Image (cartoon, rainbow, N blue to C red; front, side, top):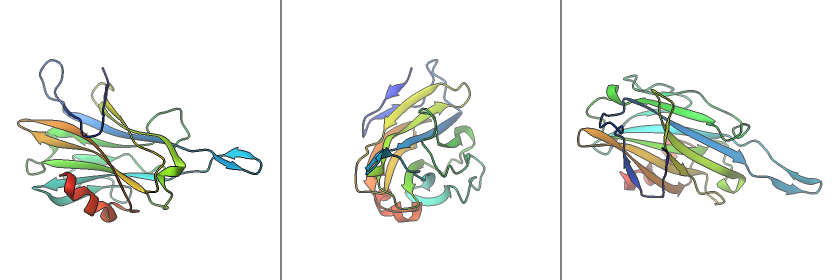
Length: 192
């Protein structure tokens, strides 16, 4: 059963039987908002980019994004850049796979961000979401609807972080401005 998350909400990544999840997918989906023009409304393509920044004791140690598709240790993998997004019917436009069992023990947080590399703002985006899926069976575990309509070019979507011997996901939803994950670091650090 999917949990529809609210900003700041955290959920455990434990299976119903008490076992731990071993592999998850953070999916990102969006659609371009229609623009009214002289000859009716039309949409234009929006290129949003998902990134995962891996932290150890609040220090960034690796990143996975469209120019570095696999973490150095191989535990986190980006499925590839989608330059147009929103062409499907609500599916994932970009996804990042996390093999939780392979994440090195010193990595304690993985922060997921989305940014517009081309500088388009979220005023031009609608129906944006991130969702966490159990990669072993395809079951959606959690969904967080991203706020749209703002004059910002990025959002800190969510983080997956260690909690005792397992993992948790926390919905963040903090708007930010930047075209790359490097630009977003000042907005990421306060949510660690």
